[in-house]
Length: 398
Image 1 (tube, rainbow, N blue to C red):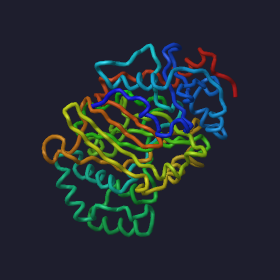
Image 2: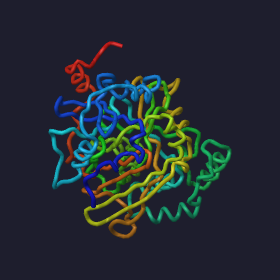
Image 3: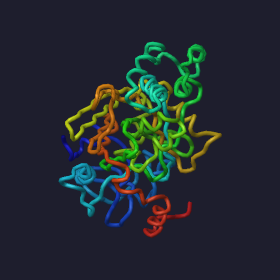
Image 4: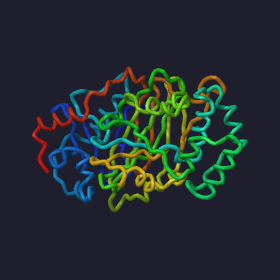
């Protein structure tokens, strides 16, 4: 199992990409906004103290490309020190910079049940009340009744309404089917601003959970105007047993210490990367366990049931504003069902799992799994950021 990572963390064409990220700089005990040029991480914080401010520029990619800055660290050294947190024998050098999540003041929102294949797994969680031992039997029953492919059903369509009526008559309607094929998307708050972890950090599983999984997703970067200006990779870590007990426990299932990972960078839209590239994106997931377990999967954004622009429009607009912008998880196709332990128990994480989410145009998001109470506590929020920037003389009047 490989722990140290270098340039393979980056998009395949990273030298041509317009990338923005955040780095913790121990020399100033604070975060820096960075871009990559000529093999170096370039600090552009004096132009934009926050990523949120950059993303609100009229043309963020052009503005970033034109900005000068100071060399912070060689790209290879930055990535190696970021990934070193995944290697217990080596460890991270606290005196050298490392990657943070590439968002800061933005709200962290997520869309759920946007892929037909994983939609059925949400229904199964609900029907089993979060009991993994019952999942396989319920899965067979539901597939026998409604099939295993709802991709042809357009959300909110007449066909979707007819299917809803038929399933209600058979007692099989579900709140997950409502948001999966109904007119309104599920949009929820995944995490608080500043709480997401970056590439190389540990991700947290609440210790009450015994049935959980990674959720690899494309994450949209959206300005306060509602314009989608870029994209990144994300892991919407999920506790299946907790959410399965009750949808009202969604916050406990989704929002825990280290349960939201984003990175490695936000790729801004420019001539070489557009929203259509997001629509065509292919994602892969690899989970490598210290017990020798290995899980691999792939998914295509072409299978999403709602266009990403529709998800953004349902999140921000005349009825719901985000003055600092937002990042939006777009949902996952993955719902691993492979048995890891006893037959019929399905997949769940174990401490030490190494999770890699990858897409050629966005790079790789790599994180190691641990309990949420055993990883570093989140202690640098919005107030800390403002005090830090003020101390560095970086806050200014508009």
